Image (cartoon, rainbow, N blue to C red):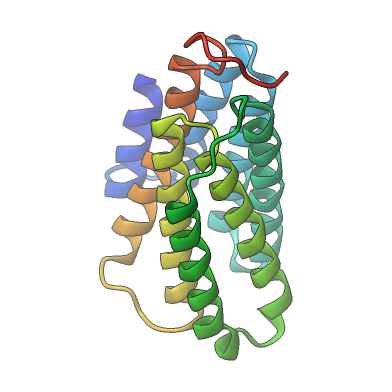
Length: 202
C-alpha cells in the first residue's frame, strides 16, 4: 500500500521522470494485494484499470485500447458486485435515480461533440453506470464511494477531452480516480460480503 501511495504522489507531482512507471505502480499494488487475499475478480478488475492507465499515458492513439481495458474492468467489477449483493436485496431508489439522471444528462450534453467516438464512449458510459449502480446494491459504503469517485473521474476526463476544458483537470481526474480505486479495493477487502453475518449471494 505504501508503494501505491508513493507512486501515485510521484505521478501526480512529476517530481521524478518515468511518469508512466509511477502511474502503473499506483494501482497495480492494489491488484497484487487483492490477489494475495485470494480475491481474484477484484484483482483482475484492478489490473485492468492499471493496464488502462498505462495505455492512456503511453500514446494518444491508444485511447480506445485504454478505454477497452477500463470497460473490461467495469464488467469484472459489476460481476463481483452482483455476486456480493445481500439477500434479500434492498434497492436504494433515490441514489440510483440520481445516478441515471446524471449520466443521461451528461451523455446528452457530450454526444454532439463526440463525432466518431459516440458509440464507444456511450457504451463505456453504460458500462460504468451499471458498475456504479450494482455497487450501490452491495451495501458496502466504501465500495459505493469508490465507484462514484471513479465515475466522477471518467466524467471529468470525458468533459475535458470532448466538450470543454476542466480547470485543474490533471489533479482532479487523477485524485478522484486513484482514491476511487483505493476505496473500492480496501472497502471490499476490509468488509467482504458475508463477514458481517448478513446472508449474501455465492
